[in-house]
Image (cartoon, rainbow, N blue to C red):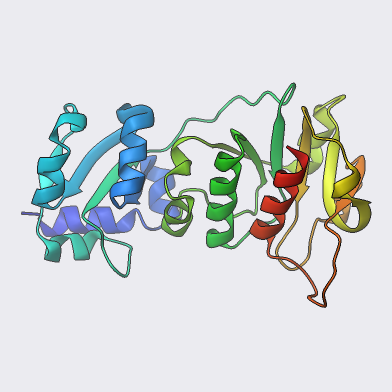
Length: 243
């Protein structure tokens, strides 16, 4: 049985301030929790699960504290409209050291919608991209909506939040591509082995001061009348062509 203080504590991790103070976040659902356990179960601090899930996964829990709870209790601690069997309290990643040579990395400028960020993380994982560099005003990677939208890819893709205007010039001799209108057709660009691909804000695109640091502007040719593409959709199309 969960006490009121424990319920309140877990609920608080839905807020960025509490996540930052505690160095923890919450992950929900069988798929996401399973991926976290498979990739690095040492990051999982506690598990709260319905009895059937706990029984089925007893072999992979491997010493992690687990509390069997009722559906009603899961509903109280869940951030989901429809709670799904299990919730884990997970340690946030320590600040990663990023190497941009000999690989392709994504750079996100002002991606503020949690669903978009989570989907982009999932897309990056699909195409084998292991790291994403985010501007400081991007959505928090540990926002419950972001974590949920990654569908488990949060366990495999690392994110770095930084001031892009100072970070990008430090990546010397690394090709920088920026998704923009009026750039080179992506169909004419050879597959990339190394480079940074910048994706801009959902409504405003890439900031001028960031765009100035790009060596090549790239464009997905438009055939219809839509004004723009969703940032995550654009990311998927670009990566499918350039990787």
